[in-house]
Image (cartoon, rainbow, N blue to C red):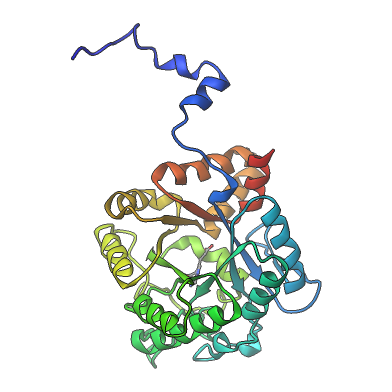
Length: 331
Ligand code: PBG
């Protein structure tokens, strides 16, 4: 076999015009690739901007419904809900997570009712509900207890499923919780409620603005390194994914996003399963900071970073830029 070379091959030929670039594009980004994380707060007609997440606000349930409609109209298939639980309702065991009338459940019911054709993904973890800001219940030493927490997560997942959640997304990194949640969902007849496991979730410095948004940052002492993964590891991420799939996860997620695209690629190649990534709050904040500093242009940064997730192998991306990106893609 002969190998053609210059000038028979000129790689720049395909790049010479917009139509030929489009023709050979290997990856496309569409609004249907986007999952939009939203923050919910108590009250009526409330919008609370989040200082460390410029351009993102918490909304009361009524406002959320309007934004859900907008998202649906833009072709965004799914929303991810995160509640900012009133401080007085946070306690040692995160009991508000199990209240069928909590903010999360009210939001699920309201959006399902008004915008039935958009998917709702709900986070399973106790950090928006515990006084410690941790994802689970803690012992006297502050260690997050695995099996005790897992039992509560099962109840939390059932509470969300009963309210109408479509995808249960455990983000807590407890061992064994996917199997426990799956069997509880099956037992209650929620056979088509899916599980998207935060399978490879790292103990990351990129979550700060999110913790402001759900009100857990000020409460949290220390870090989450005894349950979230060490950024040094990738073999371990593959084991985590293998376990969650074996336990019954339908989809797996890698988090954070851009700094962990190597993990996305390895997961996709190894498991050939729908793989998602979360472009987390600190990543969003970095882009916005770059724009504010005049170091980059928002539209281009948003589209390039999101396309990178697709190229790495993602089926979809959770991103706070979802609406902005969908508008750009629809234009
Ligand atoms: C909590 C949770 C976190 C995020 C999603 N679910 C934060 C954490 O683990 O401390 C982070 C999302 C983001 O930073 O945008 N279980």
